[in-house]
Amino acid sequence: MNYIILTVIVFLLQEILADCYKCTIFGSEFILNKDFNLYCLPNSICSEACSGVIIPSTEACPRSDSICSTYFHSESSGSISILGISPLNICYWFLDLRKRTKSSTIFDAETTGHMYFKINSYEDENSPRIVHEYDITKESKSEFNITGKYFEILVFSMAISGDIKVKVLWNQKSSGSYEESKNIIIISASGAAFLIFLMCIIACLIMTIRKKRESSRVSQQIYEFVPDDCSFISHMDTNMPSKLFCNKTLIDPCCICFEKFYLGCFVRELPCNHLFHTHCIDEWIYMKKNYSSCPLCMKNIFDFTSQLDNSINNERALD
Ligand SMILES: [Zn+2]
Ligand SMILES: [Zn+2]
Image (cartoon, rainbow, N blue to C red; front, top):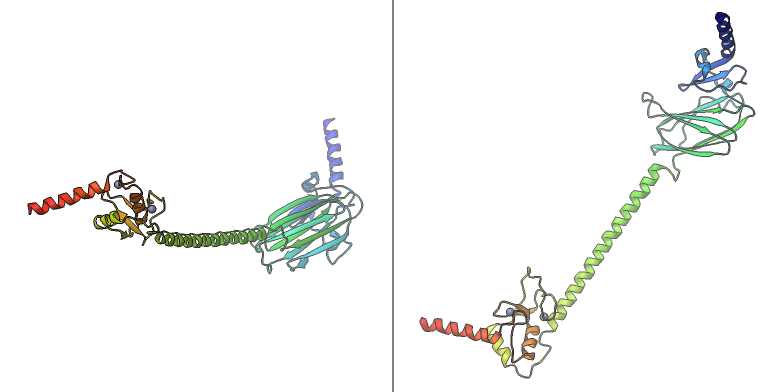
């Protein structure tokens, strides 16, 4: 009983599978029903029993021989419009894009029905094929960025009834291409870097001009005030003469005016070793005649200098 059932099942299966054809195009297996009325897809149950056949170009797409064959295209951008692919039929063609300058190509695929879209891309004859497969349905417009020099393109109509229109475009100059966006990024980055560099130079120039102006302003301020009694100035000039500032390492400002010491301005160093602009300390001493102390350490300048005078006199006496 079991044997009879098994025989019937095998017979039925053979009947179904005998109607399928397996075709291999660009390494992809397609299972087609011999009457083109059975919806068969790659790796379907037919694959075991169907005999392998390569569908000739005319049979693959009988509507238009010129485009539905292993047709050769070498333009870096172009398009193919197929006016009608009958259900479960295949169109395929070949692109040789060695001459173009960009490494990747943008493919656009549009269809009025449902299609299986496959692109094999490779760098040269011996390099492995990179397979890109897409399932595109009606009214969808899809964009694919694919690298390679050679492209094998295959369109398989998955419509059960009615012809579908297919348009495939390729272009290396699409605004969305990776190479182009990379170039835009590089150009904008270098532009920004140049702008920053220019701004730095301008800032440096402004700072230098300001420093020079301030320095000349400070030197012009020397003895702007005119004291009515100059005796203390002559005393100070004797004991702590005004000199040109030339200490490049000193960064502390004058603590009376809080201005920096610029090279070439006049300074006076008090016996306590504290340094001031000459005009600043002179004005300070003049204003505080009765209490002539260093603004920083509060030591009496004249006491100090008289002590210094005394010690010098003592040394001389000892000699
Ligand atoms: Zn000062
Ligand atoms: Zn001092």
